[in-house]
Length: 224
Image (cartoon, rainbow, N blue to C red; front, side, top):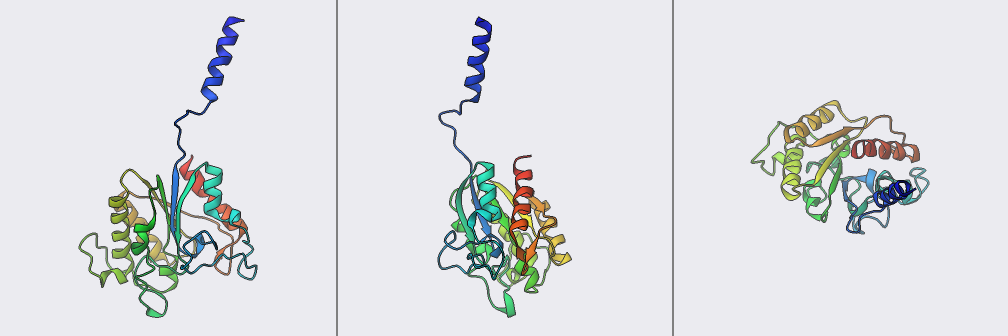
């Protein structure tokens, strides 16, 4: 009987959360795929607004990042996602997108334990040139091409967020040279990357099923 009581007491202690235990914080650096009205800076352009004419995603709880935070037991630090944003400075119709680029917004992510970067889609869609692999001393002109811009982004992310786990998400359906360049540059810096698969989409953007698919694949990497 005494042994049983000791065993039960030990089990109870092991199941009790430590008083000082702190949940990890996640920040999101993204584009339209990670937006939702009221959850990103008000001045940013957004795709997900609850409007059913866009997709069937009408509630923030249906977004991939909300599901990752909730189901993974994390806290949301910052979601800095801007619809139409590019990694490079090359925007649609050849416009200068430096103000909304991932590089520029990297400073706005707070103090996360985990950083999820989900980009490259608009670079692919806007026809940005991939350029050459250039890992240092990039000029402003270089940053209008994808490879030098992504290299600068990941290098600065590692410098700004030491001891932070960085995971780069790669969308489906991108131009082959964008996908291959992303993988090569992530490998160069030792940054984790996730090649997403089988994402349901509507108007080129994840629908409810697609959001769930992204969330489950991200959680499988973060919490294998």
